[in-house]
Image (tube, rainbow, N blue to C red; front, side, top):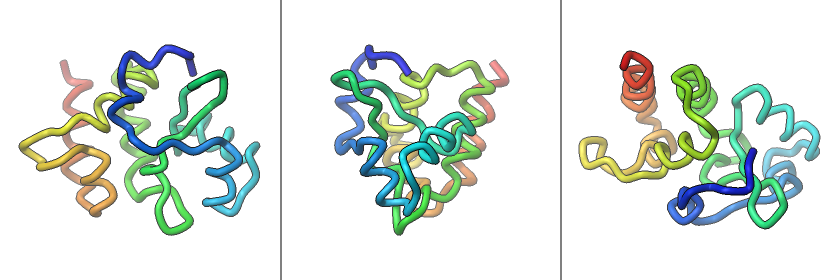
Length: 120
């Protein structure tokens, strides 16, 4: 989690603090940190505070397919910032962004693409 996010922050839109994310998930901030260590969630420092994209949480839970996608991206050598940029960059072939596809339960294609990134 670094302070510099190379513009990925502009793509994300709405952010949540650890406390806000914990409230949305029904857990404490320390559990949210554990989710980040386990690649269930991803956060970066913004303005000196760890922030999580609000799009990663829906209906009181982590968006289905996000943890597996984050693990694939990490295994492919993506930094947190690079993973955020990939997840929030529009892809005309999906269509939309990978995170939108996950929210819309189209995670198989997203994970397939993330897995292919590691092949190169």
